[in-house]
Image (cartoon, rainbow, N blue to C red):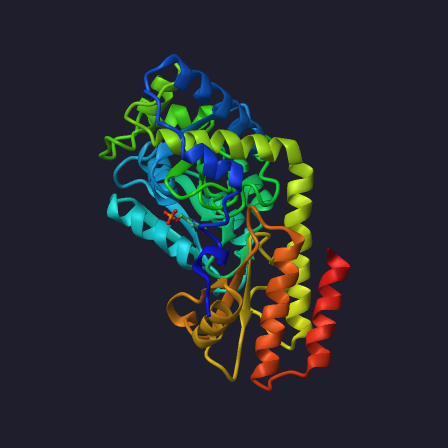
Length: 384
Ligand SMILES: *Cc1c(COP(=O)(O)O)cnc(C)c1O
C-alpha cells in the first residue's frame, strides 16, 4: 500500500525538496518592494550567476521553465526571422511550436529520439549562411523525454563562429546537474526552471542573457508584455521585479542556492555523474536496454526500455509497493520506456533503493533471477 507522505519523487521534475527549503516556503511573505526583499534578490541573483558560471544577468521569472524559454525567444527575435531548432525529443518539438506560434521561420535539425543531435549538421547550415539570415539557434541541452544530452559545447562553438546567430538554450535539466559554463561557451540565452536541479517546487524560472542577447532585444518586435525581459533587466538594477514575484519561492531559492554553494559545483556534478552511471549500469545488468545513446546519457534522467511488460503497469507496481514515483514515456514511447529521475536532491540511498525496487519487481514477474537482481545492486554500488 502506497504511503503518500513517503513517496519518493524520482521523476525529472518536480524533484524532492529539502526540509530547510520547505521551511523557508512556510514563512510569512514579505513585501516585494521592501528593502528586505531587495537584499534577498541581490543575494539570489549573485548565487544564480555562480551556478551559471557567468557574469551575465540572470533574471528570475515567476512561471515554469517554458515561460523562461518563451521569454528568451520573444525578447530577442523579430517576426519572420529565421531560426534553427534542434529537435530530438519532446522539448525540442515544443520550441518549434513556440517559434512558429510567434511567426518565426524554423529550420529543423533533427535526430531520432534517443540519439543526440549531430553538431556537424549545425556547422554545415551555419557556414552556408553567408547572408547571416539565421538569427538564433534554439535547442535543448538535456532532452528529458529521451534521457539524451546533446553536445552543447561543440554546437555552441559553431554558433559562435557564425557571429550573428544567438544561442537560445533549454538548460532546464542540465543546470545544477552538470557543468554549463555560460561564459566559457558564450551562451547567449540560457533557460532553466526551479522544479528541476534547483531543489525547490515549481513556479520560478531563470534566464541568463548575454550582452549580445541584450543588443538583439533592442530590435526585437515580437509581441510581449509579462515576459518582456527588458522589464526584468530594468527592475534588476534595483534588485527588484517588474511584477509581484512568488516571494516565498524566492525564500526557498535562497536556501537551496546556499545548500548548493555549501556542497560546491564540482561535488554536485560528480554526484549526478555517479548516480547516472549507477542507474544506467544497473539497468544493463538487469537485462534492460537504455533508450538513449550510451555516449550521451543525461545526468538528470535515465530512460529505460522494457519489453514483455507494459512500462506503465511496471511504474504503477513500483509506486504502489515501494512508494517511488518513476516517469513514463511520452507520446509514442508511452508504455515502452520508463524514466528514472536522478536530479537535484537525490542521495546514494535513493539510487540503491530504486535499483532494488526495479530488480525486485522484475524478479516477482519472473523476468530475471534474484541472482541478477543482486548483481545489479553490486554494480550500482561500485559507482557510488
Ligand atoms: C521540465 C522541462 C522544461 C520546462 O517545463 P515546464 O513544465 O514549463 O517547467 C523544459 N525543458 C526541459 C528539457 C524540461 O525537462
